[in-house]
Length: 178
Image (cartoon, rainbow, N blue to C red; front, side):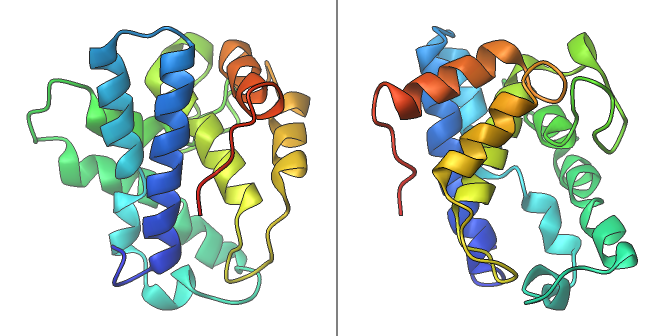
């Protein structure tokens, strides 16, 4: 993945680090935190099926390109669904763009239909993506990323996950690695 899209590879590593830290701070069992770490490390695996020109496009995606990009969660699930893991890795990947109010994708799941692990990866994913440089825009910064999850706490993102993430950055000085 890194050879094809260096942004995605570094992004997945940083999301994995943050998601694992959130899980541990929430007091989840080590076994569950390890599953979150592994799922987050490959949560964008499905982007392997997205044309490289779209992944590295310097400008805004067209509507069709964005719809194609949204297929990556399902594609990642399809790649891994038959692999036997002791954790629900494929399902975590499938659900990492779902939102509590049902506005996410690919299934429009709500609240308790979404795995806690997926809710954790979702928050870590948004925070890392917004606070990092992308081919189509400069970093928006950690403050804007934390404002995003705070503003959508309870509608898009799980309140307990948002609270722990904000605490990590604002009280414990956590920083997204380079």
